Structures are given as C-alpha cells and as structure tokens.
Length: 244
Image (cartoon, rainbow, N blue to C red):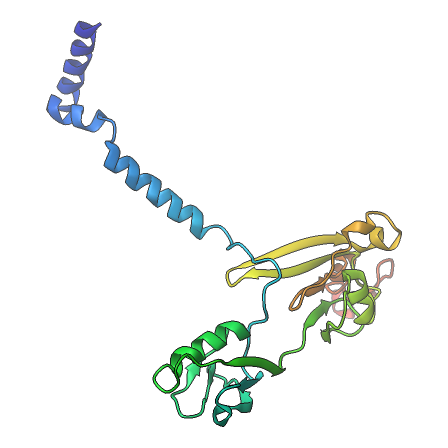
C-alpha cells in the first residue's frame, strides 16, 4: 500500500511539476490553531445572524420627549420634578453636566445619576419616576378603512386592531401580516388568515398586539389587475376611424 501511494504521488508530481513537499503540505490536515480560528469565526458569524435574546417582562426604556421626576430624599435641594429627555437623549441635571439616558430604564438612570453626583454627594439615594412618556401604540396600514396609528390601551388582538382601524375595505385580502420588531436589526413577520379567525377556525392564532407592532392588509390580486385594464371586462370598444 505504501509503495502504491508513493507511485501515485510521483505521478502527480510529473503532471503538475510541483515538489512533493508542497503537495504534502497542501494535503495536511489543519492544526489545532486553524481549527480554533475556524470555530471562532463560525461562532461569530452565527451570533451575528441570530436575534438577541429578549428579557422577560422588560422595563420601559425612556425616549426623547419623555418627562422624568428626580427625587433626592436626603438632599431635596437637588430635586427636579420635571426633567424632559432632549432629542439627543440627554437630560440636564442640577449642578452637574448633562447625562445620556435614552434607552435606559428608570433604575438604570438612577445608577447613572449616582455616578454623576459621586463627586458632590456621598452615596446619594435617588429615585427616578416617569411623569410622562410615549403611550403604547400600533399601526394599521394597507386595505383598512382608516389607516394610521392607534393607542394600545389594553390587550388587543390583530382582528380587534383591524376593527379599530375601520375594518377591511372591499379590495382587501383576508390574509394579513403582523410585523413585530424583535431587536434593532430583526423584525418578526407573522401571516394570519383573518377569514378563518372570524369564523372561529384557529382562533388561538389571533395574536395579541405589542407596542409598536404594525398590521398590514394587502390588496387582492384581482383589484391590482383591474388597475391596468382601461375598460370593464366583457365590454367592447369601437374601432377608431383611423383604422378604416
């Protein structure tokens, strides 16, 4: 067997002109380092292609134009009952530089403020409360009676959301789409058959809306097709005199 392998290798050298040492190196299996690098690259690629895990019962994250109340129980001179989050995400605090709070929850903002006041107050106790904030909403677009943005005041399903938006118009399909943003780079899309839901079939699939969700109702194919027909189907057009 070894003699046969040597003969095959010699035949390849004659055909390619490459030294046997080079062929041996190219056929060698990758070492542990190469294997580790490949695994690391694969892991990084896999992580970048997957949405981030979501926390259970996440706290509200403040946005621009939200209003906060900052309370210092042991140092009331630093209290600020109405602090608005600026468009750039900063808030102005008394006696210190502005701090960035957009995207943080109230407990996280309290920790940021403790660091900001570390040079002024010794281990301060700070309470952060939301005074005014962006109300939960959902969007309805496409073939509904009144497309737009609507307040999400209570538990609302997709079919209820469509009813709030004026219901389906005659040109609407009964297959609708629910868009839910999972993270900054990921959007979950769910297809629902509204006709089945309204008839009690697969009623459990009538998903509940989350703040920021979007419902899209597409147009029937026949309605799209009719846009490109200049006259009704089944009618005739008299030839132009120019063709006589």
